[in-house]
Length: 150
Image 1 (spheres, one colour):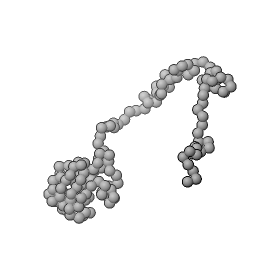
Image 2 (cartoon, helix red, strand yellow):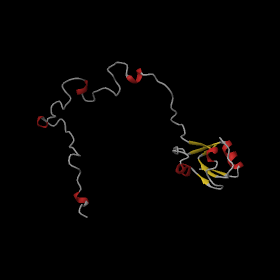
Image 3 (cartoon, helix red, strand yellow):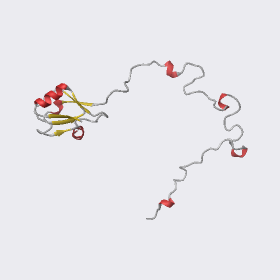
Image 4 (cartoon, one colour):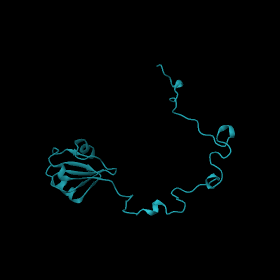
């Protein structure tokens, strides 16, 4: 092993020393420490809050507010039972991962899979999902299959 952990070093130029301001004239950042002469920005604790535009109506208040985004909305990937018809053998265990592998769904929502009742189902399938609509559950059990909410 030619390289050892004791000889590791960062790449040349990838790290820089921090700027130490207010340490005398010789440092190049003495006296006013890069803050200029007088004014609000030169004072301790000075400056304005983010978004402040000098008293002008800020952009965030000038633009129209539209729409609504529910931060508590559930993120399910929905699929109708009709999409499962003819794709699986009777008695097969169907879950979100299998559907994704087969390309039937493109993604699994962070809250899981929800099975809806659109279409017809004649094959008995054992389906695992986060939620089932009442019609989907009736069609799956009517075809001789089972539902498992995970």
